[in-house]
Image 1: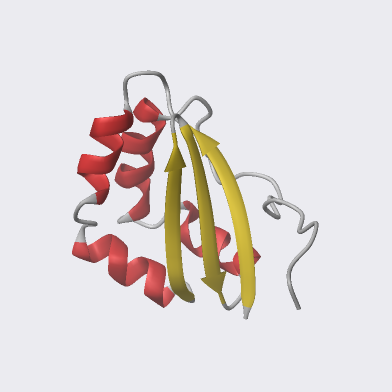
Image 2: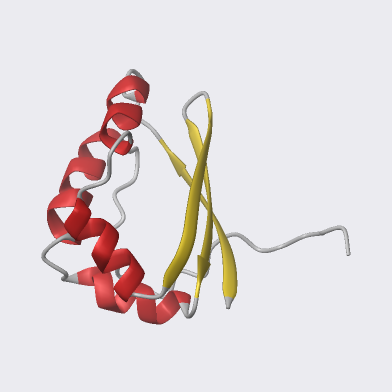
Length: 103
């Protein structure tokens, strides 16, 4: 199991829209995330900054699985309109590096 931290940033004024869209995740996207090995995904917001904590069996495999998934593509299009930097699922993103944790 991997625990990955991510940081994204909203465009100014998109806070309510982002939260509204996340009030209920589409069931097909929920199913795709679970099928991709996601065990939990939390998003925390501080102003425009979003911090994600993802527990997943294999983060690289999850991203490859979701890259062209029919439930994820339209969701990412919606998110691209709200975020400063669109996630196009290219590259080998590994999330934020862990600096410290209480053992």
